[in-house]
Image (cartoon, rainbow, N blue to C red; front, side, top):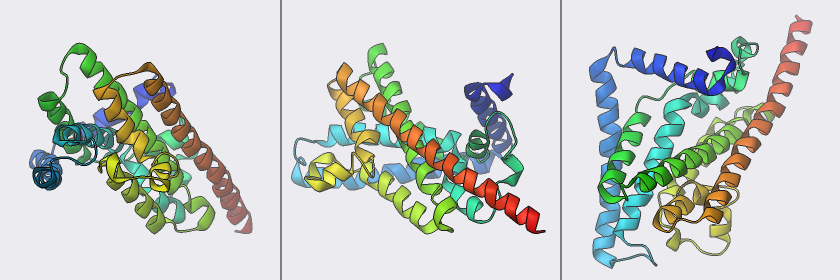
Length: 264
């Protein structure tokens, strides 16, 4: 049954929401087109910089194209499938989780898949199209690209889940969660050569943009099994941390709900 298989359940929910969104065809297409154009305009900014300076460290425009292909695809995959992850802080602080606490297969998964972000599919489409133009389109090249965007999306999902779950502990954390989420996305779309010292350390720890795009691009350019293993460990750790923080907060939320019910 879809209800007991998380992967099948996720794909089923995505299909249902995508079908519903496509009933309003013009709105659906316009959101996807607008997001793809937005990505293109941001890429034009980097094109102008590389035209002026030639390179940034060891990175050239070809590397930036790969960075955007990975970054936009990972974001589109993460937010397209689990769009509600960006709204958890508000729902937590407003006490809106009660309806899903007992729903199978998992309250966390139900929350994540309950709000698809249609525009994010524009990012995914843009990233895949860009890679088809500038990347290695052999079977091996596509396999590496597919692997790193799934792992990058997992890094992002775990980080978003952990930061949004801060509302369980500090009350309304919408502003903080949005700030940290924007930091991850922004830094992931900058070439790593402009970062050094403690900043580079932060990008592989507290705000793991390095694992979302920088390492994946290195694997596309020069694949290595140790690098893929490191990325896999980072993605698994990020998702595990996000889940642990969410579950710890959910126990506080359930306890608080019981206390309120008893008080009534």
